[in-house]
Image: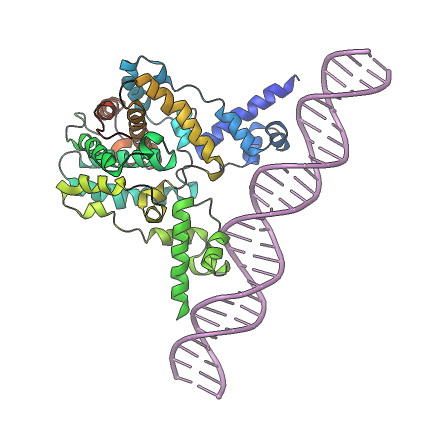
Length: 188
Length: 188
DNA sequence: CTCCCAAGTCAACAGTCGTTGACTTTTTCA
DNA sequence: TGAAAAAGTCAACGACTGTTGACTTGGGAG
């Protein structure tokens, strides 16, 4: 088989880099094979098609590192793994990045981002007032979006099945923590 | 102008329903015009193209209701507006639904959802242990995904600019609240 | 050397996409 | 009523999509 293994792997790796950063629909087979320097027909030949290639990249997902820590260190490790500054190189291999790669259509990016800022973050911060209003607003939005994501998009049973009352008190409690003004001593 | 206004509005409304539930890339001009019962050419004629039609639907976004409450009621109102059971009809007009409509490619839905459950939620719950492990795991994931979403996808300045240390302590504090076992008295 | 199978190449397919220009119909206004 | 403008229709375009079948190449076994 000689070269074929390395070709398959090259295909999987470039596919991962593209899929996980630009999303599935926004990457064409020819984008991948072009970047990998191989023929486009090989995708259908080796993986049965574009979808098969995508599944092959999913099989490469590493265990999320914080999961390998002791339970009492887990939260600390998780926080650390998220605190890194924006590094596209490192983020390309991140499971969370992959799962959120499709969120914003490239053509709409700036418009969507501006809308979130103007229609949600800014008025929410102004309404909240007080110290670090912008930051507390962003945190509250993060929680709301996050829970919504888990419930409606990923459909995690633990959250999707909850009664409205339970979910409401739960969100209120989380939100209170997010809105506490002593969120960060260091500025910016 | 007579009929044209109603045609434009029909176009905007059906476009909103489709875009906001199935995402931008996954809805074609012909999908919209077919559902609205009008000619496909009118999209380019009236709105300058598909993107213009999408922007027109964005102009229809209502103010997020909790923003109109008094600051001290805001959190309560926000929690309530998220606690409703899964109702596609109502959710179609929800800003949060729209912003997350693209997250999961329809062809990949089950695969992605299964992966999140098996690779993240389940092992995390097992590692955490204790009461309501599944639920606490889901909540921690919600926070991590939510913050990641605000930082990297929506690029809210308040979070994107933070130093790694500040972000780390912030995530740790939020995570602790999420992991507290007394999350919900009511089961399921 | 010869055969053969796998690896890789090439052109083309059928389908969908957003968009356009020419056309017909309807409405509006003088 | 008659003319001009607006609204709506239709077929087709060029570009791109994923995929396929026929082809050529390369290296190992008989």
